[in-house]
Image 1: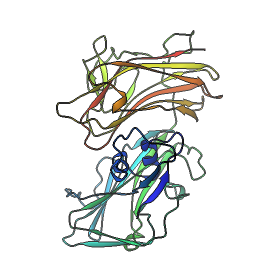
Image 2: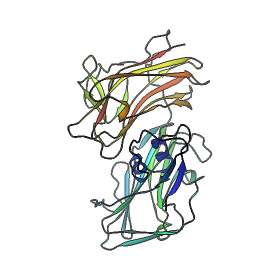
Image 3: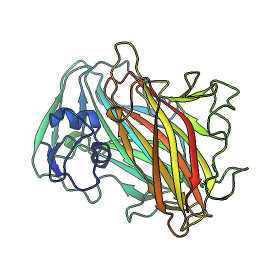
Image 4: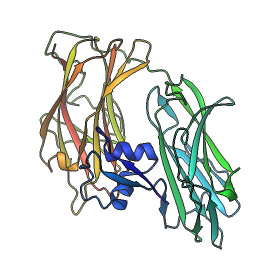
Length: 371
């Protein structure tokens, strides 16, 4: 049985999906939303906290570890736990996925005491630092789920590296554990390991200059010697060096693998109390017969000199906000930078959903001081 949530000011479907371990695609389907970029304050949404996917997987061998992925057999079920990376910067979201697949030749019935279906835990050494279900409420309603042979259930959640008190955890090695909370599986879980590194300011980095000066290096991505790597001065993943640029030779195309997240970021030194402006050009790249279903997050994270997270600015854009096959300029003002901030991380994150086929190109990024 699903729970409900009332939309608050500042909410987006993406944020709500992260909060409840769901996806934009699931929330859109369950609530009959035609435009995932439009929801209203006061709107009551039905939350499906676990995604059931009726497909047949090719099972991984028992206890196999492939990349940052681990699998183990639990009776007739194959548990698979994964994170999107194995090493994270301090303050970076950790995306966790747990899948259980019926690899037996019979139906498996699972019973639940509440509407909770899964849980994730982060531990350091022997101590628990974060639990996904902590502070959440679940309807006290019993239910049963039947998994047919070959079918699976997939559960997703995002850990923002906050502990159970909401404070940023320290760098180090952590164990991520995944559980299904059915009565029959209560004591059975699976774990993998991740490492969180201290936020380090890359060198060299531009220092704050006069008003109007672009603080970013290689803002037009023209220094991009190897197609398979990130452009010089930037850190990225799932990128493509595109020759369809606004000007010059290259642009950065996010979503080389269309159904996977992509990221492009650069850190620069800033001064607290000042106001900065971010300007960039973007276009949606339409594939023949393709479908665009994605969110583009344009975020500015603020850190102290010690690498501690201070705050962030985070506008979001859907495919409706970005023109097809034509560049458009965008800009935002940071407002007064929080006290204690000494480093800004300018970050573009491409988050696809559903059967997305399209990509987003970014070019000519400017981050400059206004006041």
